[in-house]
Image (cartoon, rainbow, N blue to C red; front, side, top):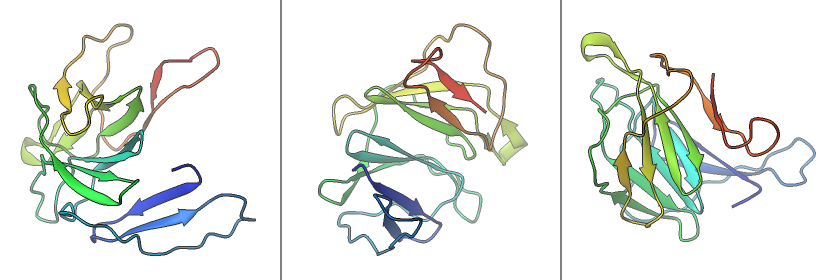
Length: 167
C-alpha cells in the first residue's frame, strides 16, 4: 500500500495516485473495485489499518447520518460492509479518526440534529478482520473538548511516541 494516496469525494469513484519517486507529478486513474460500494457522503473519515481502508460515518446531502462501516480491502480492491459489535458511538460527521495499532480511535464530530458537538472518543478494534468491536475507552490526561472538523494523528516516534494529537 505504500506509495499510494486514495482520494474519495461525494461521488462513488476512488482515484489512486502514485506518489513514489515522481518529481511532483501524479498520475491518476480510476480504481476498479468490486462489492457493495459505500453510498456518497461527506464529513466522513477514511482510515487505513493494515491493508484495509475503513470509511466511518458521515452524512449524505440531506444531512442524514450514515452509521454503516464500509471497508475496502486494498489487496483485492473489494468493498465490504462491516458489522461492528459493542456499543457504538452515535453517527456523526466532522469527526477525526486515526489508526492506532490494529484499530481506529475516533474523536468528536457533530450532528445537525440539535446541532450537537461531541466530546467523546471511541476505539474500533480491527484486529479480527470482518469482526470489529466498538468500545469507549477511559482516557487519562487532559479531557477531550467538544469539537468538529478537526484532525488527529498518532505519533510514531520521538518524545510524543504512542500519543494521539488532535488539532
